[in-house]
Length: 371
Picture (cartoon, rainbow, N blue to C red):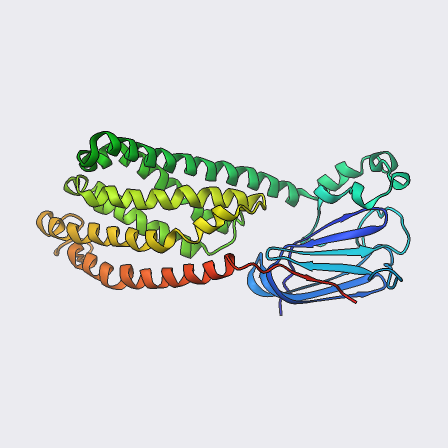
């Protein structure tokens, strides 16, 4: 049986050691301390999805087991992490966390909290760089994974920012043209923003590779299905049929897509830096209620209006005889697509987003202390 361990980030002061466990929505965590050994077990969402996570560590030196004033540890369970503070038996600086020199792959240094002035009094403040020359360089060399996480954060920030600016541009062009020309601007929507919309949706296929390479969490298959569905409508239904490009439904479809994305991408940026902007979170998990059904309805109308055109032109239809001995009737495929994928897909998507909204907008910060 494979034992799954969450990512654990550690830091220290002279008197204490802090652990940050990267586990979301943790349920009934069990944490035990036995002199210089700690064990942890909990169910939650981590790097391997939602399942049971556990780990044990033999620490470099013993911990305080009992004090008159407070517990030997404090454990706080938040929605997106668990924080634990351990008190050292001897107030000295540890050269490493574990008794063994070998470090588990899931254990990383929390450089943001490596030296905390709040935990040290003035007479205890020390220059770690002076006491341990080259320690930080050594730690950084050992923490190549941590550096890769920094690079990933920069890349994802640039990607999300670019997509946000792109969809904002599309939305602004559409709104400005509508304010100037009113309804006369609607038939020319694809002519003015179609190229930008195609480029942005091609870039969105990177979101399929992000979870595959560990840059983000989630299912690559789900991302592929969502993005491919949009791309099918944009490139096959609209780009390939010029008569569809002047239909009013294209204006409303682009409007729904853009409104969704100008909220989604800034929300992802705040999540990267663990900044909770409630209004942005609320919009992310509320705007879908009207926009997703309207967007899917516009996609369905686009496909439905295309069926007569596909019947007339025979575009994408393969007839027999041919060298492959294979036949494909595009209008029939579109009817099946509407019947099997679009409407059942809308049901499952709405159900998924409803469950997600219930979890994300529910305040659930729990503070516990071990006795």
